[in-house]
Image 1: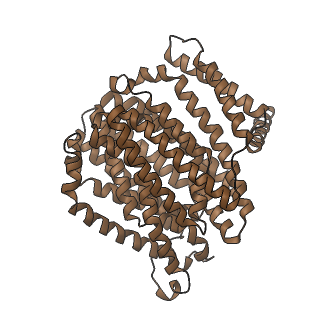
Image 2 (image 1 turned 90 degrees about the vertical axis):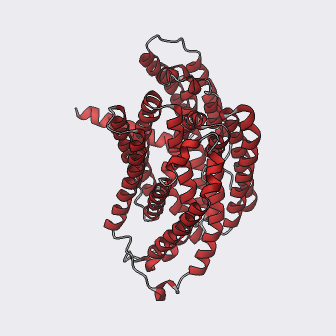
Image 3 (image 1 turned 90 degrees about the horizontal axis):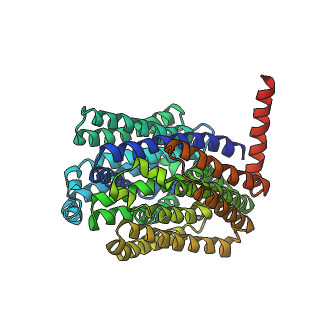
Length: 498
């Protein structure tokens, strides 16, 4: 786990720096200087381009994770595997773009009544989708070659710094709103360029084609696997983005803005999971190759517990500071819809509490079941959102998220338990929930301090001390206790030196 822990630590650092920058963007700048409709438009553009790029990728992201160990060579040529992957991906983008242009009247008709502004930027979604495709394609290549840190920096830090620059230009009237949108699209291009340059400089990627080499390996199986993952990945992505897409179509951009704001805050819960996931996935793929189910099961159990521990802390931390949050986001449409956060946050907690189940299934010989579960997620999401959004608006989308994520993860949990006898849950998860509940009550009922910054600091610190101390005292996670001892000894050594 040395490589995993080292890169996961760096990924976590950049991810939390990125979360801080995202906080500046989403909580401080966008609500203060953009209308909720303008912010909603930006989020709808991102969601549409994400679905677009996922379709264009033709299921290659998981295919790279699963099959790269079979192609890896010491000379970094990797039997030209990565060259073929790149050509296939850009071919998929060309086909998807053609469909996107042909289907323009149908797509516009879905948004013209409640989100007409999106039609003004219809073409801009094409380069935004292309930049997303390039980034995630080469980020996946970086992941399987154990070079994940630069990719994390590019998307979590560099992109958000560029966004801040764009917002400042908008604030000082250097940019119009249209100019800001164009700059925002270019920023995605720059983050994609960073990861592309890293991969080229690492010499892990050489654009070279040779049919003789590729014929000696599992090309047919890879393409078959990719076709399954095209359906699976598309279903999963649309299932996750359908809430924003349907709010934009059924309610309007202002509600897209409110929902996206709280979903962003809730998505911070994912940071520990994504930091470990970036480097854990190739380890799982190698374990499947060697048949080491014990290693996979152990990683499944440990990551599940760690994700829940950090996820609960973030979740209760936001709720106890809700009044402090309202100080920064003063718009009524945001404050009145705060219930979106507890709902979406709870849905994400369900997702992280069963760890890397999707990655395990998708990289196994039973990868077809991952497709099935993602299709179920898509259908449940569409039905739930169709039922609840017209009744409750953005809060209805939060309810739909809980229903969808519970169904999705319960099925995957049962599958891994029955098929591989892998079980990530035990009594320790219950201990975490009890500790979280006690910590929440302490922070929630702590008397308000008139100074918002002081209240934020004191309330959060009190909750963190109670929560963290209890996690360590009850030895909930051996990994966390071990890392705490390492950091404590390192700090004591430094202090004694001075």
